[in-house]
Image (cartoon, rainbow, N blue to C red):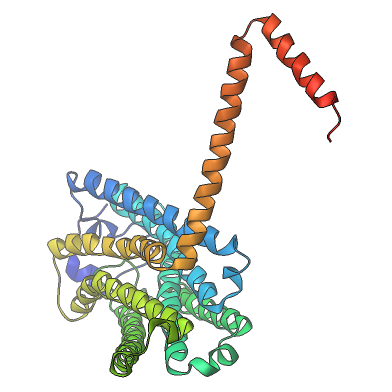
Length: 361
């Protein structure tokens, strides 16, 4: 492979050769590769298990899967699962195993999968914020405004838009034309496309922040009114208290989202205006692990804060304990029978037959 020439690669990339200059993006040292591989595998594995559990809890309950808020939540869990699978496999294949045999189209197709899932994840959080916004500000009209059908339609539009926007580099919006400037962080990606994606993410984050700040203010106002009028706990509206608690839960999720996404977004934005070196690319490789951390933390917050999900989880665990307990007791009974002499076994069987032969009074 040719020697890396940053000036050439980021100003006049020739896309005829699929392996040309790709090692400029392979910045991890041999000592860093095992550590980051273990880190990605560990976080990614937990992320898949947790989000799969959330999906199972929602769709195994006929009550939860009909609620619009949990339909949106299932979209987020699915997007996080898909993002983990596509992102971890693509990152390790390129940065750890240094596989460069794939064509430009294959690389951009992998990037499309990662981009689609992360964009859909942010979009799902945006719809969840809008759902809570309506629930708190217009509780009397919530059931009329937010229905199951509208939630499904909104998710279909969201995923279609995320897929279309993510396919644009594969359709031609890349840096393989002479007038385009290539990204310093992603091969074959144009700076114009990267800047547009950053703006989209920032708009989504700003909208989510606005919605939840409004929701939090309403929750604070509601609590203050309750204290002011000295209302008893039994006189308060249970549905509204649950909505406020869920809003606070989603606010915690939002804070985690911002903390996990902000470092990577800042590095992407910085790369648009200034030349970065390999140390900055290594820092970026570690910063984007926070995306996986966000996907891993979300299900834990749902399980801890959502009473319906936690009760479903407890019910399933209780059923599993009963099944395991029954199987163990049956095995012990069989073991005891096999250890008895044959004469004792025959006596027990005869005794049982006699008891069964007596009519029930």
